[in-house]
Image 1 (cartoon, rainbow, N blue to C red):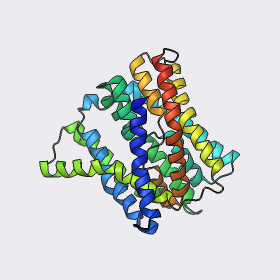
Image 2: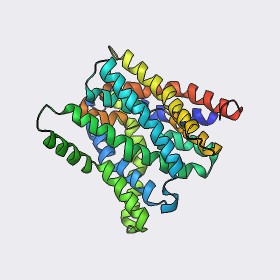
Image 3: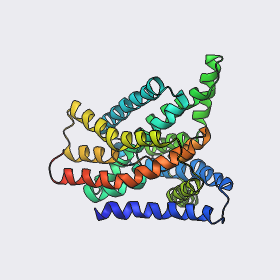
Image 4: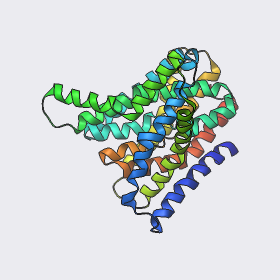
Length: 314
């Protein structure tokens, strides 16, 4: 319980600093977009590249765990998009953004520190699996849906061409692809470049959280309660449940990795969720959903860990 509290409290301290900075007038909310650009285009790609490039190829992916985690997440993605589009009558772009909040966990900044306390060295290899699923499968699908939902009716080939162009020029996708290649061929970067990437990757989490606090300073929750509630329920309950059921259906027989997968799925959404959504105009809703989900996750994660450690689950 103290481990969870120490992680969540540090997150909220940085978010609070961003919030206070804008509220005190030390920084204009309109000027904070550059922080998001820095994280998305530089800091986070550096983090993802290093996470993949520094892993030996044989440890890069646990295929069985990757399959289970991917199938569980994709099944929830399909259900989420269908529910948003056909039940709530939302557009495809908005459906993609809201579904992103329930299917991609904060694996690096919350999931890994918690898992490391429980499964120790195994946490590093499982993190690579989650990062790969989330960034090579989930994120491209959701970004493609968001781009498709934002396109006006026209030539299908031109629309597809535009989507592919945006995806292959996305710094996150480029970083992941490069990291996999460096791992496969065991390439090494010059030390000055590697040191620069290390510094950039270290800045991704605090700058992202600071930006979220800045965004929240001018946020109004009017009309958002229903969407926020559904995101919270989807991320903290439905995502770990989907992973758990998929592991059961596939008869996954490694209890340590099974626990790790469910625990990671129970984390709140990844901290750059509002940064990605800012391109589509949903940064306010996504920032609010992320913060509220992170607060509530202290209780749900603690409860899940207690159930696992007491032998009632997995």
